[in-house]
Amino acid sequence: MAGEGKDMSFLEHLEELRGRLVRCVVAVLAGIILVVAFEDIVIDQIIMGPRQLDFPTYRAFCWLSHQMGMGDRLCFSEMNFSLQSTTMGGNFSSFMLVSIIGGIVVAFPYIIFQLWGFIRPGLNNLEVKSANGIVFYVSLLFFLGVLFGYFVLAPLSIQFLGNFQFADVPVQATVLSYLKLTTTLVLGTGLIFQMPVLIYFLARIGLVSAAFLRKYRRHAFVVNLIVAAVLTPPDVTSQILVTLPMVLLYEVSVLLAARVEKGREQKT
Image 1: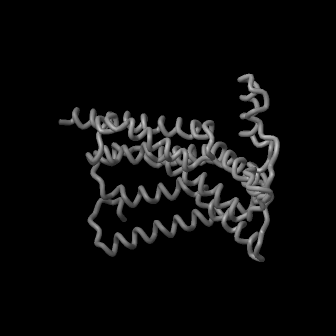
Image 2 (image 1 turned 45 degrees about the vertical axis):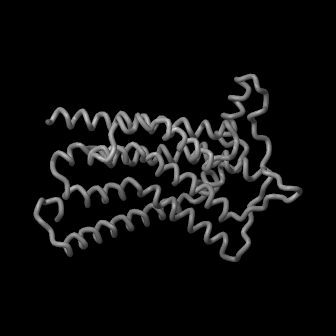
Image 3 (image 1 turned 120 degrees about the vertical axis):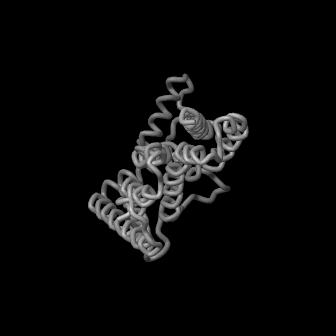
């Protein structure tokens, strides 16, 4: 096995990779089975949750509006759109999409564990030690991003796009378009939250430095604003809510790069 420290041929590496990919597929299937077993909760309460006016995000905005003396300005009082399936297989395709995405999310930590298990034997002891806990941190950041996407980006986008009026045309979206919007936002944010991990490894191999990140902090802030504008509805509140965690992630990345450089200097 790769973990025993012996040299492996190219075919042996392929066999090792195949075995880990098979285990990842089995984990995703197990996640799919779990999602299907709790389909009522997953579909009615989680997937369709942002369509309900009592969704926690909408209630939080309304509470904040009252606390700031703004009355009901930030309260959401209507959902002027409906969902429909325009093909015979539309509902089934929607169910399969939810099941597969749900299975991937549930199995994500195990997938990262298998990926790390394949990469780890190719690293030296110092590199392995420096990446201690990588599976935990990658998984933690991913789920934090998923939660942020689900409770912030998805409901704000659904509220804006679903209630946007063009002449007298009602919004009658397909259920697949609704699912694609929410899953893209949620999974995309989960991946964006991997920024500190990416910067950490780039700093480890010397491609970026803390000084470089500090020098281009303003440029990064502009990029964050652009990304926030793309991901969110065109209103200031939504863009601020998305920009703040991205800026925080960037600053965490700067600290990680500085820590890597400090550790390198101590060893020389």
